[in-house]
Image 1 (cartoon, protein in one colour):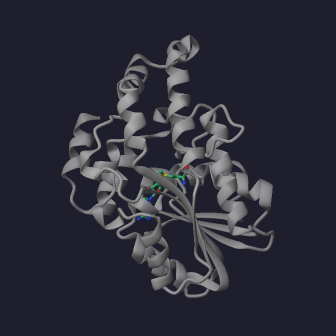
Image 2 (tube, rainbow, N blue to C red; image 1 turned 120 degrees about the vertical axis):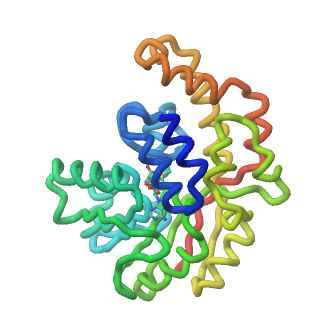
Image 3 (cartoon, rainbow, N blue to C red; image 1 turned 45 degrees about the horizontal axis):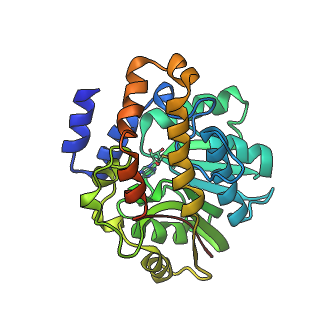
Length: 285
Ligand SMILES: C[S@@+](CC[C@H](N)C(=O)[O-])C[C@H]1O[C@@H](n2cnc3c(N)ncnc32)[C@H](O)[C@@H]1O
């Protein structure tokens, strides 16, 4: 674990660095309890991270307007939870997932096989900035809490535009700064300090510029909608509740409990620093 952390910090290639980080978090080291989702969640009406993470997946699918005959490209699919859920709930005919993290590809593919879904879900190795698909070949491109990693997000927008059929839709759920927020380099809260290390300056710009970059790659009908109030504060409160829950302490390993407790030990600082973060659902045609 310590060796891996050292490798992450000292890896300069952005994709290798990202993949190394995620290799450190197999399903049994995730914050969720009943699923393998890996996002902060969209919280209205939710009390558990598993529910909120799925609600965020729904927010993306609803914004994109998933339909039964769609071919969907999911860029950065994690362990595939949202794809299994989308197949059940929206019935797209095909989902292609691409990812740079080998453990995600392997485990998500095993899970698709166990569910008998390999004819409809195809998880492949591939980068957001060199999408291994022909021009005009998909109806929807989605990136659920992954685009801040891409090298760069702007290059991903260009690739998404290339692979989308005319009239196709791109939707992201993404972490960006608030206009005039605290500089990324000054973030000190342990719970969000990863942002300093894992999000490159090239991807750290606020809502207005986000939309402008989408437009500069050819997209129209751009909408960059903040959902920050439905993400950060309820996510923070969830962790506070969980740390106070004796059942959580009982069922967690000592190491895991300690890691969560350390990450969330300064709630005043975290509350203050979350004010500098925006969370957006961005869509374009
Ligand atoms: C925070 S996780 C989100 C996973 C999933 N969407 C979810 O919500 O549970 C980010 C995902 O993006 C993937 N990723 C990061 N950089 C990538 C890139 N350049 N191309 C494709 N996938 C990438 C990671 O491997 C990981 O699976």
